[in-house]
Length: 138
Image (tube, one colour):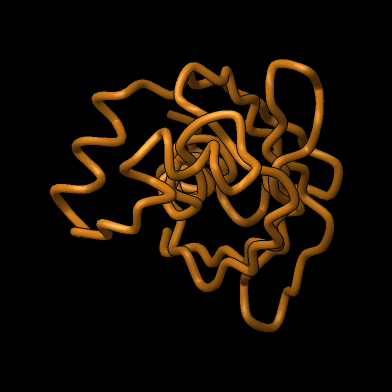
């Protein structure tokens, strides 16, 4: 876990990590949210509607933005203020996702910073982008 303080958190810092999406993740996410939409639950249904398989929950993939902030940018001293997400492509079980964030701006008055982030699949295609506002509690 990184331990950037507000003073050491500077524009340009870049962090990346990877995650492989599994069927177990889908089952666990369903147990939490109970979203039974057939696009997430029924492979034949999703294929019938133009997708190659059932879709991974967008909010499951978006949860990795929380890990990005809470573990990497800035890490230990993070207070997540907001996350604005833009979904661009579907994600499927088995996809290998790369989550990347870069510090874009700092606000001295409020001791917070903007992290621009994105999630890409194993083909290098962006599946979502996010603006993450983080605060510091140290």
